[in-house]
Image 1 (tube, rainbow over the protein chains, first blue to last red):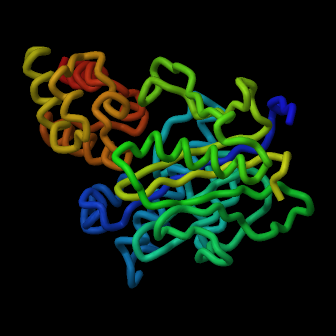
Image 2: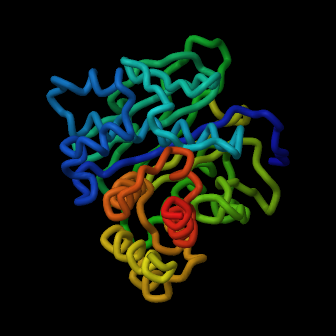
Length: 239
Length: 82
C-alpha cells in the first residue's frame, strides 16, 4: 500500500483504566479529585450510581480520550478535565466547539474510552462480537454503524499486559491490529512520536509509519495497570 | 522557601506516584513528570491537589497544564510565593 497522510483526516483518542489498579481504587471517594475532574452536572449524575468507582473512571477515560483528539487539532489545548463534558449516555464528549463521538467499553476489570471525529453520537456499549477479548491477548473491535452514512468508524483493542513494558507492548499490538486490518506486515509498521518540547512527556502524539512513510490513519495508544489499549481511525481499510 | 527547599518538597510529593525509581534517583529540574518519572496521567490531578495542600496555594487548570517537568512545578510554587 502506498499511503500518504490525508490532512484533516478524522482523529481518534483512547484511554484505558485498570479499575483494580491500586492507584485507581477509591477515586470516587476523593471529593477534591472528583470535583477537579467532573463538571457539576456530571457529579450530579454520579450521585446514586451503583458503581461510582467505575463511573468516575469512565468519565476520566472519556475526557482523556477526547483530550487526545483535541490536542492533536489544537496543540495549545489545556487539559482542564471539567471543560470536557461527557454526554449523559456516554455517547459523545464536547469541548468548546469540538463535538466528538464516544464509545465506552466497560468490563468488570477496566473501562476503555474511544473518542473520535465524525460518526455522530453513539450509545456507549459493552463489548460484543469478539471485541475486547482480554484473556490471553487482545483483539480489535469496532464501533457500530454510525448515523452518518460512510463515516469512518474507529477500530480498537484492549489486551492484558503480557510483559513488563506496556509502551512496547501497545505499540506491537497496534501494529498487529493495523497490519491485520490493512493487510500489511506488522514488522513494516512503526509507531513514532516526534519530540515536542513543553508537552507533558516531551513527545507529541503517536504516528504510524509503513516502510518509513506515514499511513493515512490516526492512532492512539494507552496503557494503565494490567491493560494496554489502542485505537485507529482512517478512511483506508476502515469500515 | 528557597528553590532548593521547594524542589525537595515537590520531589517528595511526586515520590509516591513515581513508577520509575531510576528516574527519581536522577531527578532534576528538567525531569519530566510523565515521561521520565512515569507518573500516570490519572495521578496528575492528585499531584496538583497535593501541591495545593503542601504549599497552601491554589493551582488553576491553566497553571496545572503548564507543569510538564519538576522545574515547572517548582517555579509555579516560587511564583505564587513571591
